Image (cartoon, rainbow, N blue to C red; front, top):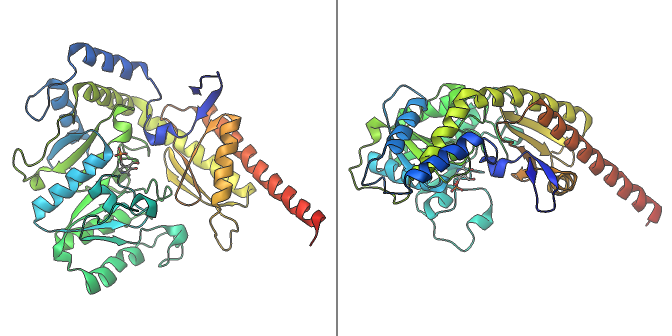
Length: 411
Ligand code: PLP
């Protein structure tokens, strides 16, 4: 719940863009932050060791997907983790090209925004961006030009990388890394089909390309497993995390296989990355996520998904429902047969819900992103679903009202 200055209470189904994983002030996170602040605020982890930084690095190495030994670098944000990954991928492979996906969002610093392909205004006026970045279509089943929505198809989307990009434009042996959000966030909560990540892993292995999983939005328990990659049993070469990791305190991480962490001491660093107060918040968050919130996300996610699917049987404007755990997307369309995105309906729904006491956010062109804190319970999920249902009914009756008004006015 969020309460504003006038005393209005809101049910939160956006968590500060999927950040406040444990809510807005979980007592255990707040206590850990206070205790860390009482001890010391900063000493610069690039040059001096302290316990919480070592503990967090070890913990992240342990919970990261796959059996390989890992090395960890701590940052202040998601975008900094992306920058570190771009540098490490190029350093380790001595290759320059990077592949990213259409619809991707990786951050706003120059390297990360070059990989971002979400909205043109995120690039406008900032060019030239990083060279040798190549964008390919994402496996967006609902709008896929290759597989027309067939549930099990991944070949078309993976095939286009080999048969088009590698055949015509780019030698795969020049490619340092493929960056992927295992579930696209800002792009519209888009879940690729089962097997897609595994096929991508195989493609990377065939050409010695590093697979980088940007789990800044979908990681740290949100999908019901610690990492979205865990749903497919895929071990990326580099895993990136931030957002929910610190429950709102600014911290991110790059977790790389030791075998590719070939850079020398001093090649990369950060003054504030891994600040002790943020490390304490991250450790307390991981305790809570592993201690029950991840399982809760799986349970409540199922309830939410079932509820949203039921809404789709009643409201024609819901074109697609997808997601994992507490990362659920509901795509609004003007017409189910044409699948024309209904951005105006989305805006209206978000605004109406806000007025009624439910905090929501959109993603992509016309997708409602449901990303509540992982602490939600049955009551919260059911209440949010009821409020969304009312909001959708309101949209329907308003549209009907406008149509009859137009009919009354006549030509
Ligand atoms: N990667 C993904 C998938 C994101 O969703 C975001 C932020 O929304 C970022 C990277 C950038 O993170 P930050 O805003 O912390 O720099």
